[in-house]
Image (tube, one colour):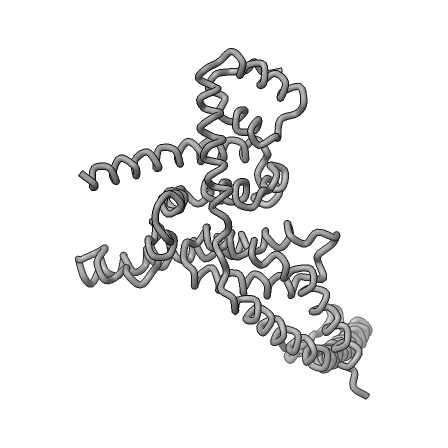
Length: 197
Length: 136
């Protein structure tokens, strides 16, 4: 008797059900991961990790709409990668400080920088490229608020649930993010005009 | 109800995003008819929101879905093997619990028997130099 057979049948059904519910949201998952990490390869890895975690926790999922639950996992994975990245950069910088005083040079180039990565984010030219560049310069929590609201069309309630903050905080973050974006865009436009002269 | 302030960027943002309750929405609409600064801010926010919405999502590579499916298939295969391992693991665990439990009972029986013997023949219980117990 193969005790595993009934379990394997259940596992097949479970995966098919999970894929049916979760895969349609992959574009949204990738978009969020990309804008948090600003690095294509990292975003792809984060999405794969998130889907794997979601599949392994699928027995915990209740309800019909998997998107909020899935996006929360994507968000957690992406933020964990962000903090790992910062930690790695600090370790490399520290080692460089101990053994090679030229901190900030080749020692840290292997870790994707937290600042805007032009080749990863800015695609094309013109207004959209400028906007992407400005968006990438926002701090992660403000960038996240803008992406979820403007690119994913989430409600304030949905954003609050996803980011585990009150709605008032969502409003505050959006207001600050929009104000910052306007400043950054003005600065970029001024720089471009200066460069053009 | 909080009085409408000219610097309520949060409220203006919520108004544009259609997130205000009906009464607050009416108040904001009325305020915008009289406040040029707020009208200008509303225009700025609408402008940038429109541009951002037109930006669209960052596009995932075409093979990402296939890669995700492949990883899920591997995870599923691991789940199929796990029940067999879980059964053997459980049997081992039950065996260990039984063995330690039996030794515990045996030790207790021997201790009680010895105490009763000691109480009968000695003023104080006489414990053997070597105690039999469960070794961890």
